Amino acid sequence: MKVADIEHVILTPVELRNLHRGSEAGSVVINHGFKFIDLDEDSRLILIAFTYQQFLVETGNLEPNGQEL
Image (cartoon, rainbow, N blue to C red; front, side, top):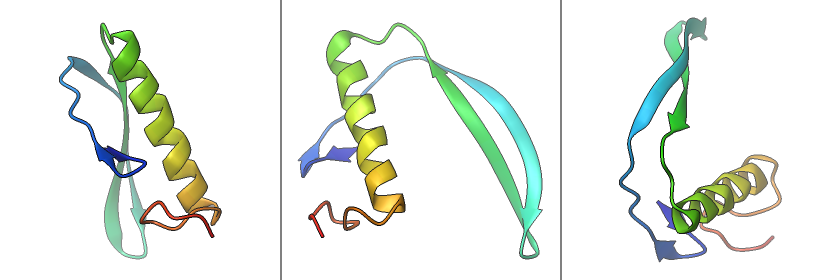
C-alpha cells in the first residue's frame, strides 16, 4: 500500500469477516472486512494512516494521487 507517496508492504495473518453479497447497478457486489491478527505497532500505524488517507480521498478532501486540493 502507498501512504504519503511511500510504498509499504505488510505481511500479517488476517481473518475474513462480515461477508455480504448484494447488487449495485446490475452488478454483483461483495462487501467484506478483515480482522488483522498480531499487528506490530509500525504496521498498525501504517494501516491507520492508509485508512485515513482513503477517507480523505473519498470525501473529496485529497486528490487520489495524495496531493492536497
